[in-house]
Structures are given as structure tokens and as C-alpha cells.
Image 1: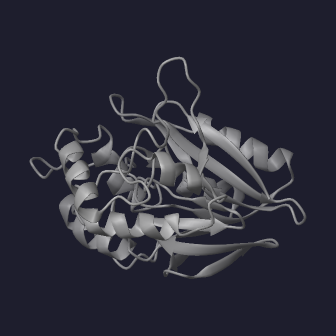
Image 2: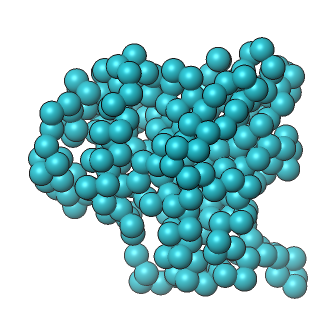
Length: 284
């Protein structure tokens, strides 16, 4: 297995291409669309690098996987599927996310409430193949109800569930978030073999440092500042709630959630041929 990583500087997001070198089949995890909120304009420069890599390596895309509905960047899955194909997938908890957020944005006319805009709604424990590579879905809710981690061979792609050890874990104050669920999800991840490589969705390095893609389970269990091996639920909950109380709303949350529920699509076109981002007032 080869993992190729692409860092999106503006949103500190990692996109991964997981390659089965024997069959040249791959999966893309958490691709990013460039979006200028002030100008309400998107571009595809970053995801073009992913496409160029796929074509240069003569890869066939089996899956386009989302670890959750992101609130800090717009997914490029919709665009990528049109360019390179592949089945789209996310955890089945997406239905709970849709139930909450579609009414907020009033987008039921172009956002399916049953999750059918995704090809695969993965249940906990579902398996999938990337060529000869075996993958297993682990539901890891807590940050959002839709969060899922993808355990592929000796690596696990954890989305926002865990950050670098000095960053701790994802916030749990979004709708449907839960410190208790997050604690239980991380215990599942910590039960994996210590040498398992955990690939992060985000990294926020200090100035002058390079972003990190991954840490081992053993490193997280020993050094994660919020939840180490032996940290109690009460200790974690107190740390997490104190930290969440200091956090502001992600600056791209409104454009991100409404589009990511459509895999990064901007929705129905008006009679005049325009698409719109909706900004609901006093809803957050």
C-alpha cells in the first residue's frame, strides 16, 4: 500500500490517495475544493494536483471517501467524481446530520434527506476493497454523528477525531456532538495495534514547522494532550468542554456544511443559471 498526501494550506487539510500498487486501484479521502468566501468563487487548482497524480500513475479510482461532513472546507468529491469516477462513501450517520442541517438551510429541494446523494452509506464494521487492499469502516462519532474512520491494512484515516498529540481531539460542540461518544470512539481507535499509523485530516503546525500527516496509535496514547491511555471520561469531558468554550465558529461553516451535504455540490441552478450559497441569519 502506498499513501500519497496533499496538504491544502488555506484550510490546513490533508487529502490522501490510497493506492494498491499491484492493481493500480486507489481511493481518495477528503479532497478539498478551493473557495474564496469574500468573492463567493471556487476554483479547482488544489484538486487538480490530485487528478494529475491519479492520471500520471495510471490509477483507477474505486472510492471517494469522506470522513464526515466538514465545517471548515468545501469538499471536492462532487467535482472529482465527474473527472475520475469512483463510488462516493460516508458513514451512515450522515442521515442524522441531514435531518438537522437541511431544514436550517431550507435546501430539501436539492439535498436528499436519505443520503442517496452518496453511493455508499457505510455501517459500522462494513468492509470494502481497494484492489487487493482490505478496508473496514469504523464509526467514530463525537465530533459529528457522521464521523467514520477508514482502517485500511495497517493504517487508519481518522478524520477530525484526533489531531496531532499537541492538538488533542476535535471539538464536540457541533449539533449532534458528544464528549462521551468521542471518548468511546477514541477508545476504539486506541484498541488498534500500537504500530497502526493514524492519518490526520488536519494539522496546524507552528510557524517554521512542516505539517505532519500521521502518528502511530502508540504515540497518540502516550502523548495526546486531551486523551491519553488511562484518561478517564470525566477528565476528558472537562478538558474538552473547557476548550470548546473558547472556540469561535469555523469561518467557512455556512458554505461548507450546505455544500458538503451534496458532496461539495453547489445545488440547484436558478432559472437565470446562477447557484447560491445561503446564509441563514441567527441560526448558529
